[in-house]
Length: 194
Image (tube, rainbow, N blue to C red; front, side):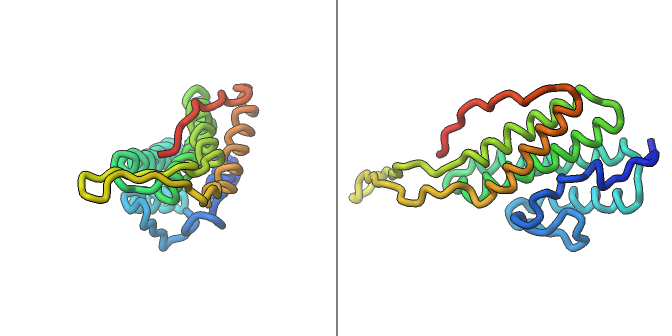
């Protein structure tokens, strides 16, 4: 299916919502991403296909590849000892949510409403995780050496630097769900901060 009069800007809309708080706009031809380098070729392909006015089926595949790349970065970061939630995991979750909104819009445009709803709900949940994130009040460490174990208070209780972007993405997902008659997205399960 070609664009059939529907502007891509409407479909992508707030897919690049967080451009002010996240590195490089997705439409930037020199896109780079130091926190999730594996997403760069996927974003570049999506950008190229948007410029080439590829059909929606190709764009759906591209957007899914981008969101999957960011989701894989999230998963890898969570399983890597010593990776900080802020900025790395929160960044990856925000980008995943961002491209899930893009994916959902493209899926809706192709008539695949069930998948679009699933994409928007996933984006909504990830965005809430980032928007509601605050560092743990207590920090601790364990050691096998002479230093022993230690615990202390975390004085940095600031929300994620991606909170504003996540709030915008959450609102976009809710708006898209309402358009599809899917109602409000379910509340996410509580996720403790490491």
